[in-house]
Each structure stands twice: as C-alpha cells, then as structure tokens.
Image 1 (spheres, rainbow, N blue to C red):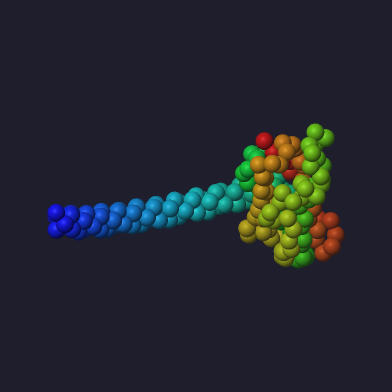
Image 2 (image 1 turned 90 degrees about the vertical axis):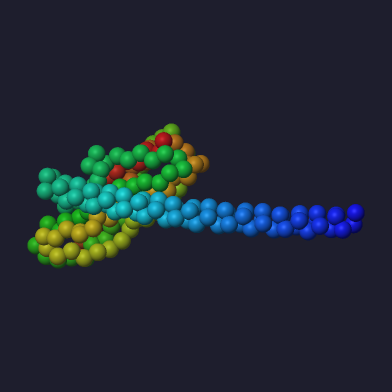
Length: 186
C-alpha cells in the first residue's frame, strides 16, 4: 500500500510539474503577444499624431495666405471643446511682417471666465500644460516653421465652464499681435 501511494504521489508531482510548465509557456506566449500588440498600437498612434500635426501646419500656412495676419490661430473659429478627464489644445503661428528681424515672445493666459464657472484665473491658467509661454527669433518676412501648440489638461473634477484665453505676442518688448481663443469644458 505504501509503495502504491508513493508511486501515486510521484506521478502527481510529475503531472503537476508538467502542468506548471505548460502554464508558464502559455503565459509567456500571451505576454509576448501582448507586448507585440501594444508596440503596434503605439506605433500606429504616433504615425496618426504626426499626420495630424502636418495637417494642422498646412492649415495654419493656408490661414496666413488667406487672412494676411501677423498671428493666426487654428482652429480658425478660435473655439475648442475638451471633455472632463481629457486633454486637447490649439495651434498658432506668427509671421514677421516688419522689415527687420526681431526677438519674439508669447504668453497664453486666461483672460475671462464665464460667470457660472467656479474657477479662478490662476486655476484656469494651470490647465495649460504645454506652450504657455516662449521666445523665438524671426527674420523679416518669415513665419514660424512649426506652429506653437498649446495643450490643456482638463481633469475629471474641473468644473464645466467657458474660458477665454488671451494670446499675446511681443516683438522686441513691444506688443506685436494679440488674439483670443475660447475653451469650453464639457
């Protein structure tokens, strides 16, 4: 009886070892496939983002030729909507229409908040996570090669409201161009 139970326990141990090895092999296959698919998703996403950037840059270039302005904003309606818990933004570009080169600076800041919104100006400014301010040089008659993108990060707890942001561009310390864009948090 003892020998039989010893054989059964060895067989059970062997079956358990084989079962464990099969499980480990299957889990490794799933892990490798998961990594492969995640890489493909990110690669596709990056390509899509590059395509969007090129399209936005082309639109901005078209706005310069159509409107003849020093500062153009995309979207040209100057309104964007971002859902709570999402991020998004807008682009703008500057053309030096003066006859001399210059040093430019820009600042994007909250200017006006709808009366039904429970945000302060400082809180509205803190929604900007990229492109709030910067400097660049432009020769006479040139425009920015790459538009400036301003990105907002709207948390899920940000109140629903409408905020008007000012875009102020200075050349050599003097006001060069200004515009506005409205952000609606939905």
